[in-house]
Image 1 (cartoon, rainbow over the protein chains, first blue to last red):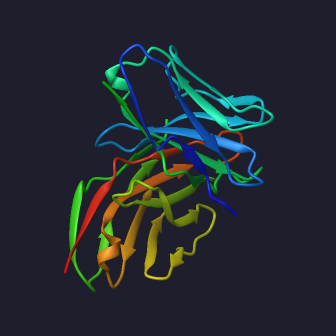
Image 2: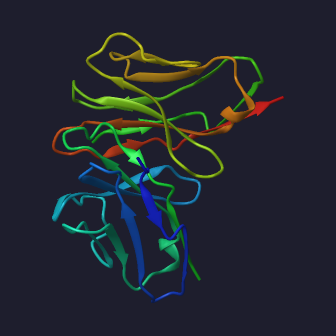
Amino acid sequence: NAGVMQNPRHLVRRRGQEARLRCSPMKGHSHVYWYRQLPEEGLKFMVYLQKENIIDESGMPKERFSAEFPKEGPSILRIQQVVRGDSAAYFCASSPPGQGYEQFFGPGTRLTVL
Amino acid sequence: AQTVTQSQPEMSVQEAETVTLSCTYDTSESDYYLFWYKQPPSRQMILVIRQEAYKQQNATENRFSVNFQKAAKSFSLKISDSQLGDAAMYFCAYGRGGATNKLIFGTGTLLAVQP
């Protein structure tokens, strides 16, 4: 059973470009979570999604950031018009239905904004 | 709002010795989960141990054990017989489960293991 997969592992963007981060949950997991880790800090919750639904987006910046988890395919975290402050490691986690306390993390995507 | 505090930015331990990492948290809830995650230089987040708040018995996983003091809102991690591979950043985290499954992380403790 493959773990949580994230791609790309490293992403470089120039200011003003768009960044798309992908997350494929573990098989059988229908809940996905996105966290951001700024340099020298702990992980901060961004958004919690189930298939085709956003359950909790209380940690998402109000502008430029969006997330989706379609019926088919991976979850996508999209950052429009990136700025240098968006440089961070973005982690995705997944859990089985009803077991949100058991989150398995992917390897993360390190976004660098030039 | 719930918060998680790790007051030790860095710790060091000799190989084969025991080290304890501290964590305190603040919540008004009675039912929740607490976690310790390890983040080695690869940056992969690895679950070390989990404690359910309703359980009085402290969780253990091989060389890793916790001291869970619910009234004091304290959740420390003890690593026995430390190994070089234990060197990593350790994060304490809190989760409520239920409708909102988000985890709240502390700022981490960087553990160095001296040979």
